[in-house]
Length: 438
Ligand SMILES: [Zn+2]
Image (cartoon, rainbow, N blue to C red; front, side, top):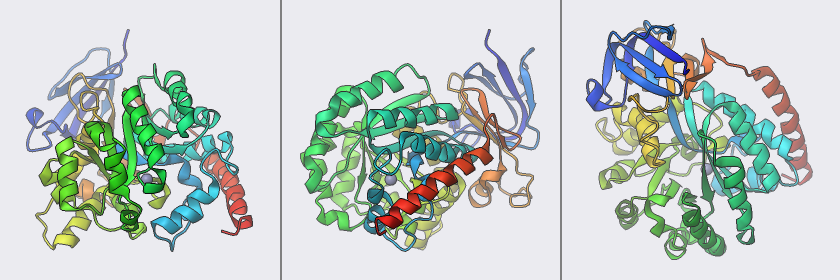
């Protein structure tokens, strides 16, 4: 017997399926949504489902859960770190100095604590799927990392790396921690640079062997041009993975590189708040879109500091308007809401499962309450989702029909305990960095 939930009488249902409603986002007014177990069973007006648990959505906005295609959840313990640094300085003083998660400073249990705090924050902003680029780490750390992701209730993609001669550990991570979990997927991570080209080549081959994507940071800062980022991508076989390659940031692309990514159907994540914080630059988003590249939005861990998908959408729109001095440039309001939902699902090849409110898809759904001082009154709710909304307006979050946030509160989680535990880890991290002279 599968349990059913009926969301009744939503003021605005944003299906992100043009065929199901009005406009490019397929919106419906005064509409209902029915879940059967972990999936969406029906969307439309006047649905009835005897025996279903009814949730009154009168006056509310219903959307597919957000898809965050780039994050580093362990970085909650370095929030605020390196505030005056650009990318390379920030990496040295806040990330490499730590010896990565699971290194000398953070134990597997510390990693669990750090990931848990970010996971709660990510759920709170309405994200239901997160790609976590988790660095190179040992099997024990990966166990703790994945356990934290699993316990959070999120749908997740664990992007992880190993040394070249540790391919077996990657195979074990996939077999033991990922396969068999309907909410989990895996990617292999590496970094395109001249000095690290051997690693990239081995990881590209392994990603192909495992049938998962290779996930890298590409030309985030202009200094990475001198490190041979693009050449490394070309010569390692990574570029040839095509849709099996996901590149993050891609800020400093030449025209011919945009064409090369588009021709191969390589996927791109845009991380506007991180790009602003680290003075990285402004991505050529309209050009990438025009070339046909599939684009998603990412929060990018502690080089952003917040977990706020609304601020991320707002910055993605704002940066292109400032760059072009035009209000009609890509992304529009509807473009950016699509990028945060269906666009992210397409980037991950998960559009058959998530990203829109279509019957048969997973019931990854959020409810916003617009009756708030920062959001009301109603004028153009789609614009207000991008320009006004905050995580506090996310009233309810479902992943596979299971509530992770209800009535504005995280379900079965203890935020105060998560904060207290993270404070203890962060204090040790700060002290270790101070002793090391950072
Ligand atoms: Zn990143």
